[in-house]
Length: 164
Ligand SMILES: [Zn+2]
Image: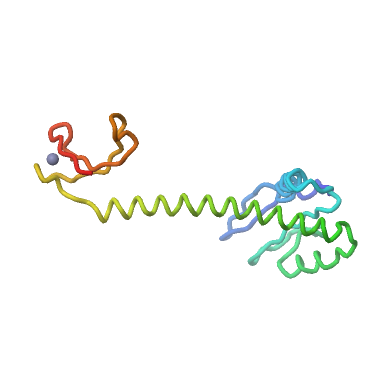
């Protein structure tokens, strides 16, 4: 995969302002390197294609692998040489799926945890039974309850009221 030097830098015209951004082929080059290492397949079997969406325009003629949505499909369809066996293809798909699943699962779990905490804090906002100030969720750092959350009066240390 060669990188045509004439493409540097790319210019994108957004709302009449032209702005230069990192040559996507250089970015894709890093992605290809990562895929090559992660999937343990030869780089000859990896094709880098950059597909623009929306109403971008090219000022100069673009190489084969820089295209608009429809052209991206055509580019893929033109690759008809068999480079990987069906077992290798299945293996690559499985590895990608595995990576996606792990990451998706982790992100999802963290998100749910975060949302639950906010919801709990909002739903359970309570007032101190002794002084009427808001109770806040705190985490015990010492004692037999270390690591556990508890409700403490926001007026601490003036008021030492707690609730579990
Ligand atoms: Zn209080």
